[in-house]
Image (cartoon, rainbow, N blue to C red; front, side):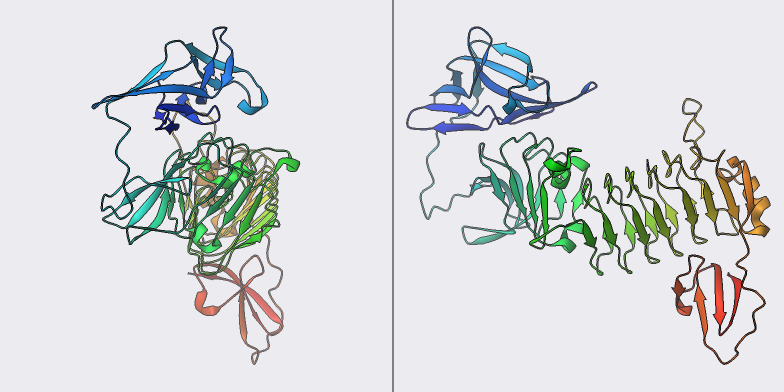
Length: 473
């Protein structure tokens, strides 16, 4: 066995001195160059045929215990999709299979009222690790064979209250029996691959949407939502409940959320999302692989966007408002339905490949009189995606302020465009003014902006019947 993660979820019968490992419980995970594999231990006969659960007899001494398999053992990985459907396996068959541990597993049972502290309790089929210093608990897994996990926000053990704040790396990875999981608002971290490869997970109850936006979800397979919608077949999609309400395709992010993370990674049914003013940043992969999302408007309060819309292949329109300063790497990766892009005048930095795969973009408008700094990769072995606009700079038209054309033609990244022209005039100059009318400011997307919220850029000023275009420095 050579994997990077081991777990032996054996069930013991102290009276009979026996133990068993369920054929549905993963025991090993290996990240190989050929792809990740999840391994299982199963019983096997002399003809190298898998027979189901692996059973043991247990011999215990004062210093150690030995689990001896009652049949041959198969150490196998699934070659196809699901071990419960009879698909083929690859791996090894062992005879005389034993597991030795360097302690006696038959310790004395803690009687009611005992002061002995167990830092790794199993409560209602859920396994935890307790931290008595911080009074917090981490979920580390569950007993095998159960269908539903209901993680509480608090545990009370020996009259001490522990807050459940995290889920351990690979805690439920490879579990084939869990269909439903309840997640509390107390969580602040879900570690790598916590919910990886759970094909039967179909119902996810997220206690609080606002709290969920703030959870540090370390990778895509740490988000259970991704597993509920892992297939491209809609008929096999699961269900997600936010605040005990069934998600129907539309989301409104609460107004007091400041930062989003991988909160909605792989939420394939998402068709509409409303982001509230007050949001500061949209983190990596927040809406990654939301394949039905067609339009999004970014609030003016957002300063930076990571790879938030990675793989949103149906996204046709994204409105980036004045106030945005940073466009991150892979922000719109493979958003192949986009045809036009307007970059606000407030943008200062653009990563090397935020628009990779956006091959249909035909028009790019940059509203700043100073070309935003583009990260340019100078790596001979990577001829593609060395600048932000590689996928369309030869065919798309770049429109910039008239007095900035030469600056863009000389700027790294921007100079790769074959066609650079002046932005069209607003066509509103010269209309008579009403000096008694209030002054109103609009950005170039036509959205009204409060005077006290103006940031450097180009605006349209309206006063009565007159409108004119101005540059605010």
